[in-house]
Amino acid sequence: MVVEIRRARVADAEDYATIRLEALRVAPDAFGSVYEDVAKFPLNRFEEQLRNGCYFLAYDDDGVIGTSSYAQYSSNRRRHAGLYGMFVTPHWQGQGVAAELVNAVRQRARLGGYRELYLSVNPAMARAVAFYEREGFRDTGEREPMRRDSSVSLMTMKAHV
Ligand SMILES: CC(C)(COP(=O)(O)OP(=O)(O)OC[C@H]1O[C@@H](n2cnc3c(N)ncnc32)[C@H](O)[C@@H]1OP(=O)(O)O)[C@@H](O)C(=O)NCCC(=O)NCCS
Image (cartoon, rainbow, N blue to C red):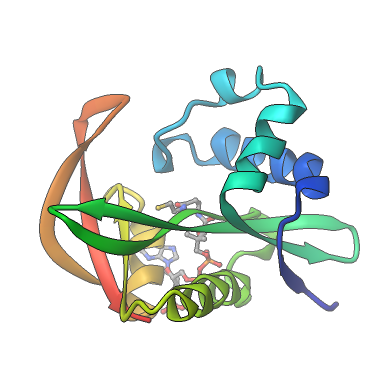
């Protein structure tokens, strides 16, 4: 079966909402947002996210199976490129889809002139951490509290793009 990765357009808002809600439902500890809140968003809220941000979607023949996103942000007056919102539906995990989703973000970061890509991960998500390490990400030693649950200390990792 062929998997296609592409940047989400505003017209893909329903697909983005579908995979985002699945992510929050099946992996609640991985994300700062909560399923019950995001499930209440009207479609135009997802459309707005797609209009203003850079999201990638993975599809198989039956529909959407994964997502990743790219963002630029500033801290300590330095601009960074970041990888966010990684999720692959359980049926498709372990088959290289996640690596393709990271590649899409890496490419975007290169286009933006960045040499490094940052992410934050809950260290309890052992599979995600193992995946990121295999993708070349390393712990920077920085920690920040998860906003919705400050008892969770998020680990910052970075990789060359
Ligand atoms: C994170 C995610 C996108 C990675 O995609 P994936 O297809 O599962 O990744 P892969 O299978 O290619 O890699 C996972 C690695 O973890 C290993 N692994 C599997 N279960 C594990 C566990 N419980 N503990 C540690 N490592 C584990 C796998 O063996 C594999 O390593 P290997 O290829 O060297 O054997 C996916 O697991 C996912 O959507 N998880 C839920 C959401 C999430 O955690 N997102 C991250 C938010 S920061």
